[in-house]
Length: 392
Image (cartoon, rainbow, N blue to C red; front, side, top):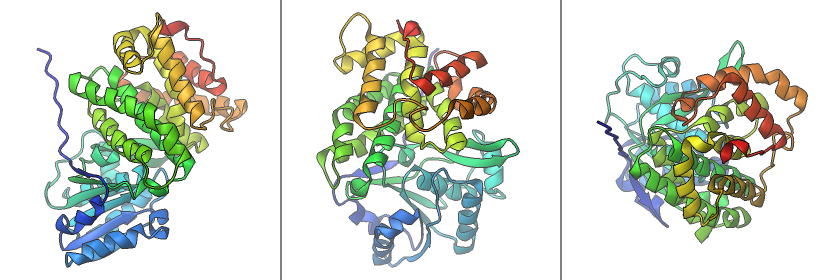
């Protein structure tokens, strides 16, 4: 038998004014997890004000940094243990939502700590689900963390920073209000939008994908190609930004089918060189699709056809289209253009190759790489060398 399962338990509310229904969703003790930008822009206080309309007591933890550390999660969990919220609201980008889900998981798991959750990774202890309502309000359009069960936390190891993936459970509710991502800077819109694209493209080729996730992914990919360039050029509540916000959630839902080598390798670039996660994916995705080539040719061909890329070399056309979209949104074409020197890459490679091979996302890639092949992919990305010989 070949039985595939799909579940997205998150209740999604999308559209202008979605924030305004918050008073009907939250309890009486509300903890808001945010990043400093959300506080500076006034969104944190707005969310707290809406919660107070429902008679709730509120507390704010707005110390989340990009690529959040285990220590930041522990500080948030300590505040939650003291405050004892019945509702925890994540307001911000993927980093904030990942911290929110991690804090909720710790509070709902008897005897758990952030360290034990990180150590458990994909095999967490059973939670006392329903103890805390988790509400996600994404401010960027890409990570899909508002509908995903995983969180990415940076752990400090003797060998250096390491991104760890842990299953925390999905948020109970997601509010997709276009007013929240309206203030995204252009470079954040580009990076996060390409992250959504990478989720969808990788899930299409995953060994665990199926018709439901493939349909969601194809729709998300088409929406990103149609709207990402305009969403980068525009600010405010626009059609393109609204479409990207929905596409990001669609792509996030496809992660249930697993991702692939692009994410496995990009997780190493961020701690090594400080490259934002979405940008790291953009630097790698054309090369990984070319590498997968024949291993996922039918699915890539279907995706190319959905984008109107007709011809006798559909995989090569898809790779070229991915690279062009990257250029059209102002993302650097190579690791070298992103500021990584040849010497820096050479020094970091042994650590990155070893951790990339062990990253859980590599397990669902349609082609399993050798260490030498991983190293070649990094060098291909360093100089944007797209030979495409393995794509057709």
